[in-house]
Image 1 (tube, rainbow over the protein chains, first blue to last red):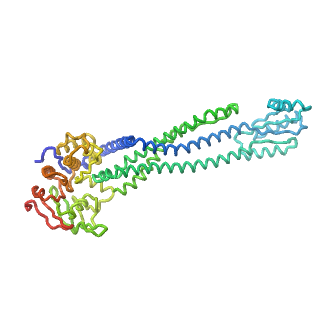
Image 2 (cartoon, rainbow over the protein chains, first blue to last red):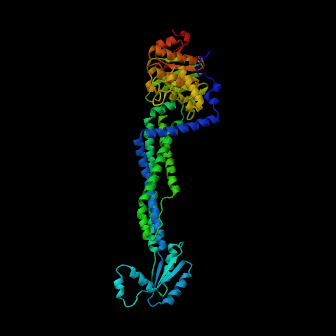
Image 3 (cartoon, rainbow over the protein chains, first blue to last red):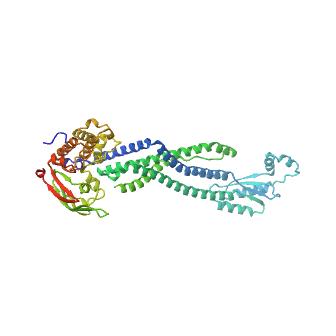
Length: 325
Length: 225
């Protein structure tokens, strides 16, 4: 007779035979839950080390966000300033109001032009009079020497080449003395922004790699400090996936928290810039449209960072466990 | 059934731990492997647990050729074997209950069933009252019993133990051996490596004697004096 309470060996009711797929899945889910909680507790059991890792990763991820924010705003600034920059057409001094109106009508009919307005010599004089330091000088003038000026606003969707062609055409008109346009500086700004975008991309790649290395090294140290436990688990039949799971969750936690930190830092930078940007906007009569990082990006950063942490932990744990097995 | 056929194990340095070893242990039998230090006892158990691989020969366990067990098959096979170590190899930051529960968690056994089996195993080794304690608070004998509970909780077909009474006093050692005897009685194959000859003699079980990796004697229970 078998003694009481002795676990009876019975092939038909061995664990392998009696487990259903549903039970397996429930157990798998349970171990995921346990791994997530245990890895979080482990992070909490060494707060300083965990915080330092999260801080380093968070800063590495926040830098590209800050540059992205800066570039985005410079781009918007350029767009806003570009909108306010009309093409100024200075007519010959002998051109009177009728010629000015006629030319304005001709130019207004061109498809590239959104609007045209005529600025009379008197309006020009009044603008000068408002500027500090000119009042006295203007009083000494016998005649108004200013010409008629046409203010052209090209269509927004017009490219730099088309604007350049428009300016060339206007310059060729015999009644036109001089043309001022903003195309050149916009082209330069766009080129600078392209360089900036590429630099941010390279920087983001390097800093992402740095974050990957940081989480990988942290998990490597964690695994190395637990090699005895891992050895025992492997000896009693744990699979590589079972052993690795808590370390993968550790990577996910590191990534998630550093991503949240990076997003918070980016929001902090936005707040820090809010006042000077508001002042700049006021200087442009509130026309300046600057913005922060989009919500989707702020939400995507922690998720992407969690994925990054998982990936770093997976790379390192696979390598470490191959050594341990 | 354990079947060793001309099994040798030679290490990289040239040392031969086992040499052309052949024997069989039928299912449900309890046997001791003995010999002086370095005779090859631990190597033999390591080969069964797939901790090491033989250099030559064939090892069959319940009809399965261990040489063909690779990759994901290794943990699956280990789940059919209960292992007891001289140094217990318990996870010191986990409770007694959690240590014993591990093989069932690994095997995907549902929580209520796990709880029932862990308590049954702990009751069997007389440690149910200690389930919430950490191993560090237990004596060496108690820790060894936790190790045994962990080894038997998943109902293994084979129980192997490497010097399980090495650190225990004779009375405690006899108690532990008594536990192994009980598992054998219910059909578990039990293979114990030990150099404690007085203890082996008192158990009156089959004894496989190794010397420098060679089988020098294979004594049936009734031949043990």
